[in-house]
Image (cartoon, rainbow, N blue to C red; front, side, top):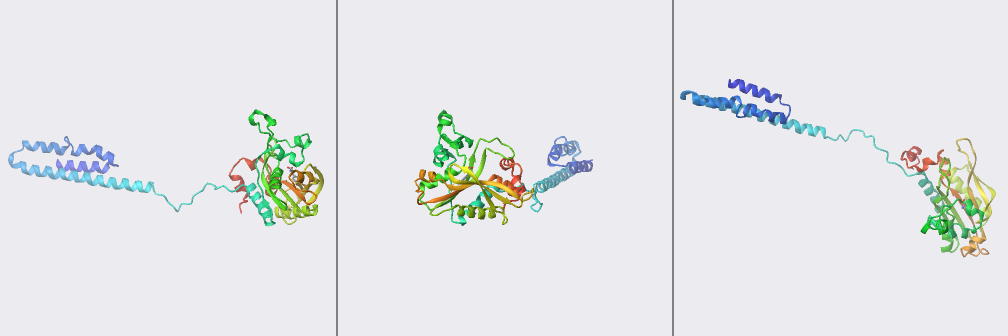
Length: 340
Ligand code: PHE
């Protein structure tokens, strides 16, 4: 009967698949009511001659069951440890589908490229505030209070102190205001470009955004002519749009330049075939602007130009919807593959 009890216990322990199950059946084989414990209790009623032998056999059996229990417990603990190791293993050799890192925005890259181009020619990069008193956005640029260009610019006004447009504070509608700061604080010769963000009250659609980017440039020196302007624009156009690029000037009007012109660029790689593309505005700095900034127009002359960056980026990269430029999807710059 003891051998049966041992065999039954060993079988039950072997069948326990984990430490908890094993612990829960321990009492059945080693507890007070286990067959071996009952057998031990019966020893008392045996004849004295048989007691010693029976006691020895019961102890041996109990020993055997205890050893079986402990051996199984050890095996299960080792298995559990192995399982934890296996399940928590990190296989560093498995190829990972990494999340895209993102990339710098093509606008940033283009602005840097423009800055590089001009600094290589000895220009400085000027930056200015995006909130400007009207004087910087308009008056100093020969756009007086009643000048029609003032309303044509579709300017955002800050409602400072509840005064609405009477606050006189604008979100700059062009970076021409940066040139005013530069001319007020520096003596000619001045060679400066100002890339930056500008604001106009345009509705958002595929070709418009109330926030966009410009690069304006200004040169003030002795003897500057329109030929210098044209040469600079041609050189820049080739850097931006490829060696085949050329510019053409069409007579136009800006209050801050005289004469003024629209700049078109010949863009050979256009997806609908080579064509002239409107690029920006330019002209010879109006003497009134020079005077407003304390520069003597009888000694100095200069040229200025201003281009939108956003459309140029769209052209270069075949982007058809301006909203893609601003909605912050990291796949956008990645898809363009513009990061150099
Ligand atoms: N400031 C003009 C604009 O925003 C561009 C321009 C700059 C035109 C300089 C002529 C000279 O549209």
